[in-house]
Image (cartoon, rainbow, N blue to C red; front, side):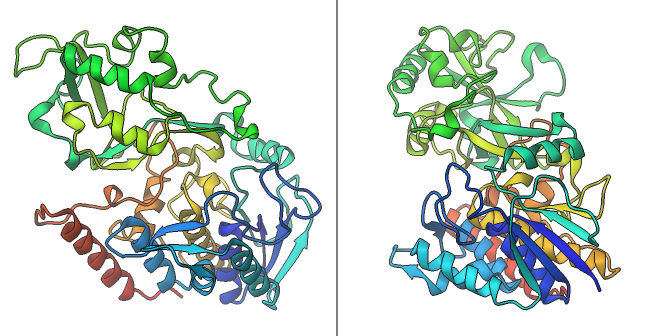
Length: 435
């Protein structure tokens, strides 16, 4: 009889186990609680929320709303339990965290094909038809060492130090220009966002006085090694970042004919060029502060942030080097990864990765071809992002319309555009049969 092992009882693990069981595969679901707890966990329940109790917006015209709508079509246990345990939160899906975790635990433990085993796994188990590693961002040290042995230590990161990413369409190109430094490489390698002296000084004052996000105790150790936040660098003096990530050397603004006082460079985040990252702007500012301060750069006055900068513990793989779009390993196709360890960011994104890993692990066991949803779907776009070899400095990513291919027609109204993207996605997924 076919059998799979799933390591981790968080969002990705429970979704993965549920999808495997739905396809007739028996599952051993390993969860180390309550025999051992991470620094952030307190409850023995599966799917324990350790941060916010919100799963973000419900409306399908939002990226997070579309993601949940797609997950619901695929039979998500987390979305089902979230709706059952919802609390009033305006347009967001927020839950009573204890009721939510209890509901998920009950559904999984009552599934006759899922055997929940409460023990710590320190090595990748053998003897199964497929193994799915759905360990979260606080994976135990022993299991992390085993994963390192499987993937190579160079492909496993323990701290997430990421610069913000914005939608390409939201950059004001009347206030920016395309150029590579010293004209090396293609002319469109970078979008350059210039500032004059007055603009820079206002930006600098806002940056050094902005609010910094508080770190958990388990985030603090080594979090800044080799990657200093731009706001900390700026506090060393007003010219420090002007001779660092904002240096204008080798650039000339074609609108003025002169070298700018300071320049922020934007670099493509994906092959399609729908997203750009702020080069050298790793930051630990609070998210609203990032939007307020970085939008002071003239070309970014209406910037739409796909991902804010973060600096915290977040164990994740260099997935584009290791994983296929179906969440299986390139070198070990019987081993799958799911959840935040793959480089998806967020509760529901982790759950969505678990859904796809579970579907594909079952299909691999049953001798069927694995599937990757189309790039027009939010889940498909995330699957492709974590396996996109074009991305060299891989960083975790949450659901965003910036991941999706653009519509053939130009729709200027953002709400209308997002609605059209969501309609396209749900119609495509609704017409698919995924057994």
